[in-house]
Length: 315
Image (cartoon, rainbow, N blue to C red):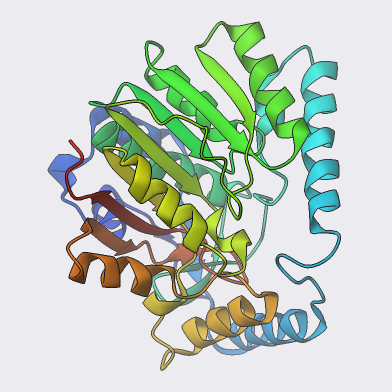
């Protein structure tokens, strides 16, 4: 017998974000009400099939983060988004990264689930992003997104805060071109830059009263994050926000988590970032403001773990 249909409620989102229902702003609640967040938990043979699918995909996966040729992959990927954006007469919907794809099976609260809505991941992330940006970025004047890709998140920020200053930084040129084209067409104060996080350009100035954001970016450094951390410590932004898969937050006694961690290691995604932040806090160099696992992800892993900190002495 199939499991009954469930619904992700405002209370569920509050738990996922590590906050209260009262802290979820009205526009987030409206978005939750407008989107279809119904799902059912997979049990029995259906769950077994999902587990087998993950095991087989992990075993056959040959992609290595940070490996040879990966820069060419990102060049090609973001250039495809750039050409689609131009050909569509600058439709912002063309900026959604291709790795956020409609999927029939997701993971949620330690289970595999089947959503009704094929865009469940994008919609869930949109609610989370709106809450995150409203709560933590209202008081800064300048926002730097490192690893900005298509500018997808910068657009959401500019729509929310049209009077702020935005910088999109990535290590491939189509990303810079996308950000500058968005700024040109829509009139936002937004600038694209080439920036290699493994070898930071010290000439890049970080303005006073600024925020640094990474979303699915530290993961791609293959644990080579120390130079970027030192760059942030030197330039001392007011707040640093990372939405990254964080292997240390999994409970590997849980099968679903164990399989996520196994895939994380197979791909070579970054490990050790959270322990390094904790070490810096113990050395009184930074203050960690929040560490929260959302308990949400795609079939293979959770890409949404929240780490927020600030250097000591930043305001």
